[in-house]
Image (cartoon, rainbow, N blue to C red; front, top):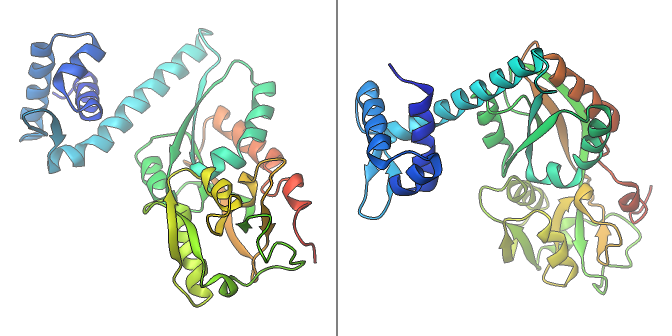
Length: 303
């Protein structure tokens, strides 16, 4: 019979890419680790790991099993936390999933308010490059609540937090910097853009916005980090499109609205019938979420 320990061993070997490193991390002997993995493979009906000369990697069967293994481990952790909370041993733990830009620009305010209201609750963040990755993790039970783009299909509860506006960032000395109106992206068709790495949710949005404006953006460079794009654009490396919420205070670049406005709905979603802790956090999000910071609104043309 498959055990939670065997699933934990599989996840650790996969994450660390080595039986030796996994055994050291888990504080078990390598033969004991290998024995448990072998037992799990017998139960699964075939190999879960390819043993390479200097590393290991998941087989197709291993890739199919790994999200369920992570979900089982996460569920066990939350169950243990709930039991400890019920007996007074701890105040609880909340697992929050978010896409990168939301963690950076939107969550600090709600988390600050939550911390004041629930100082004994530990919050564990799970961050994702793309909303689809986050939705898949939520389906597998990877977190209690998620904040980001609306998932295409979700059977649980969804709360609309508002429309997030994405803005164009240019250097302060750009010819368009004095424009007292939203900018049509078509006027930037001949520029080389500060883009995002493939698979990043904002890369998809930038490409779609440019397509709607009638062009495919040429690329100056790509970045994985959401916070890096506006900094590089302000440095004159090319325009970028980024959520208004991630623009830092005292920003020295030029920030312009797009025409038409580039918006994406932001929601919080969780399973049907959330536990009291998750429901309380959803209420805090509803009260405290600010998708357009005041310091950014002050920089933008107002109709």
